[in-house]
Length: 304
Image (cartoon, rainbow, N blue to C red; front, side, top):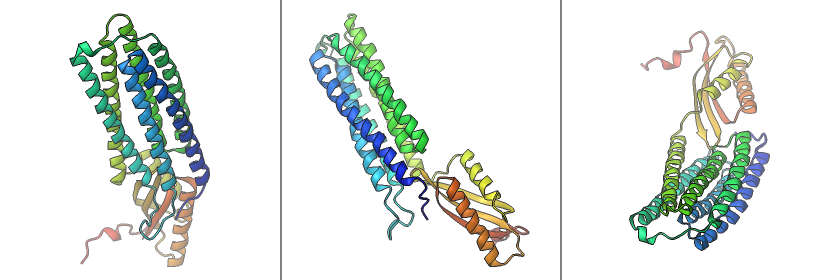
């Protein structure tokens, strides 16, 4: 049932990119949090906590990458691919929690201006350095995610991009504070919290739809249909349905063939169509139903 073309290479590449992301986030989080404490920047501390949440996200991705590659067993006939969908939902919920925490902290600072402290110029240089590092990390992870067609890695990449966006806002906030407007820094932390909250909701909602058997996009469905129609003996197809299993696809389809052929001949056509699709697409299983091309609607007639 499994399409093993490049799976091991795909898993190894995903693991490598995630480990690089984890190493970067360890360094960044400690650098930002410590610099924020010593320089008095609430925004920089918030940004450091965001980087720390990225590290937790990297751990989730590594675990999901390992678990999803487990073969099918008696309890999971289609394998464990949906570990990736579940992990994407966890990432989204983590972002929502981090965003809410930042909003709470920043709002408290704005409501109590007396608690605001001066910010040292060092905070600005740290924020700009973090921005450059995070943007570079995002571009690398996004390139890997596109090459592997991994929604989980793409979610993690955009998690890194949210860090870069937050660093821009933090840098602006620190600049405003240094210019004599101390409320700029917590205001920046507030904006960062809103950005993270919105992104987390988007990821969680997207993963929920995938867990509810959302179909792949129309472009990929059309490509699978074209591959089926190229199979010798297939005259037409109907009831082509897809659902996501992690970043892979499960397909079921009705193939219309010459009804005067033997059952053995029809079976051979179905096997050829299945192999062709699984070799060309991210399909781990394709279930076929053979219909006579002369009356392909027979299976839709009312019973009795």
